[in-house]
Length: 298
View: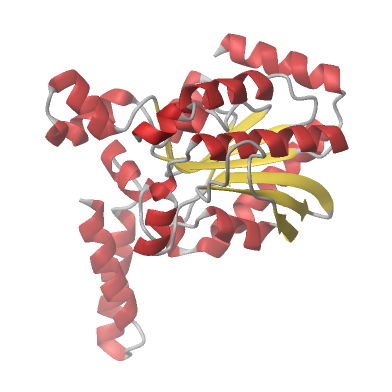
């Protein structure tokens, strides 16, 4: 299991400052462990996508953006902290940035429903996207969610309708939209921020109609067959690129983004800048036409 490899690798790297023969032996062991991280199974990918130290939306904003100004509330019912959004500058260009939010601690995760937005979060996201359209700002969305929050209260406040409105309205936006799946991308909760002109995935993220545990429970009545489900579902970034669902893969350091966040930020910055420059050169009519044709092909 990749978890065991990563734990041993961390222990080896922590001991590396020693010198002499011990250091040489540790370096050989480190290299052997790193080589085991080059051919991952789909189950390994799911583990890395859910790693608790994986960069979150607030980390990405701090690393890639400047002058971020958070905006809150859906102007309808309330505020959902499970979706973070606002205005920022990316390479000096004003953009609207929106993302599902997971925390860095148990307390934060509980406050954000572990990255599962409520209807207020989706309505807030749509409000910010319509505002971006009004002022001609590109929209960048970052997706890391196991799905929309399934609580009875969320359903009563229109969870399904909020997701459906986002799908319909995002398909018609006249400004460039780029979506990045940074970790988990499951169910309609991910789709509600993922109707984009260009969709990217981090190398060890996954995109699926339901979680592997949910898939195994529904299909085989046995959530314990999660590992088997990961293989059957074809949910990796390589699978999505092969199917034409996404437009590009952002490479990660060996063993996942949490091992070297700075390397990930550099690769993601380059990918976003290139795609944003290309999309900003298109007219509103070209954007909506290309977006329609893209999803018809999918």
